[in-house]
Length: 482
Image 1 (tube, rainbow, N blue to C red):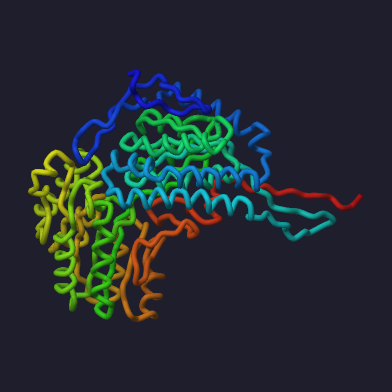
Image 2: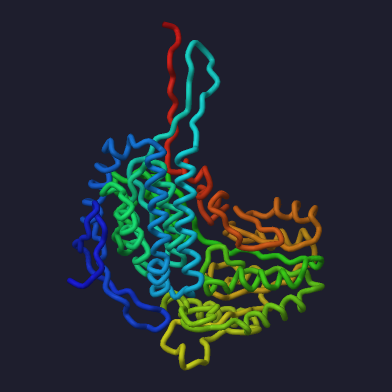
């Protein structure tokens, strides 16, 4: 289709050979535009171009401070186009404009952070055991495939692309077919910043075609994926056959814990934000709330009040706090989970339906929902809903709490509220989670490693180690015996 958004291959905008698909605005149901989808043949072409670009001396031998200068310039371009990036994300996944603008700013900050890491990170001499000196150095993999989700593409794409580029790789970004435009905007920004052609390529398309072809391609040396656990398992299986390393940031069913001695007002606010922000479509959403029984009713009432007070509206409407679900299909999936909760004996304390507002009827909206009366073993408490649905469960003591919180296939994040610092330390160390927030929730920093335990993934992104994730270690020996 001539008017479809093209893909970026080797510094050129191409329509490719795949089918086009529609981008739909979940707030209105209106089709935004058509987008070109990459075929397996497009993947072959792009990998070949990326391999050449990665191996050319202009990139592979570029000194760290020169590569850092490009990353900083890319950050400058993003900052100058914050509204373009924010609008692109808002139109496609319905996240409120205020949050989209904040995430665009965060994306720029991520590139600036890795510019600093790129220029300052050091290799090291290793202790010698003979007449030589030895050292550890790091080399890029060559071509990295970055496969990103639809819920927060602005930040998710930056936290993969920035360190992979800083590490000296060429990158092929495969954004979600629901949110292709933020990735395409990033490609435009990289060209404006002066990156060599072929170093950042952007291939919109489906996971079953473009994503699968990238993962299986022999020219791809590393895959970084954020998404569902089932897809992560398939990628890991292909990677095992290739003996290819991967980073997998997968699902979550994060426990959020409130002890009776906590600052309950602060805890209630954090719990509500932790599940209802971004319409609950966050891998670290605190979707299982465990409240000490003596304050269970008080905390529950506070959260229900907060949920009912949220201002639901079009993402760009003044003061909107809660937008639509990212797609109509996902909205219907969330509704089925709430129906299952009712079938399992749960009581919907608030929400559990679409909003009764004619102004929102054309969009994929679903009310903030609080469910009580379920056991932690219920399917709704065990499966990732990825929506604004909070399951509230009481607990009696610390051992009971830890057993229930850890009784999950997932282990991405957790939060706990208590005035007892010894308890906070003890419980935080016992929780099976890659991130634990104590008397706060959902604070995220690009400088702090992030990843999951159990079915929540493999590897750690962010931080200095997030750059090393995209490099291979090499040992060098220099003889000193003449």
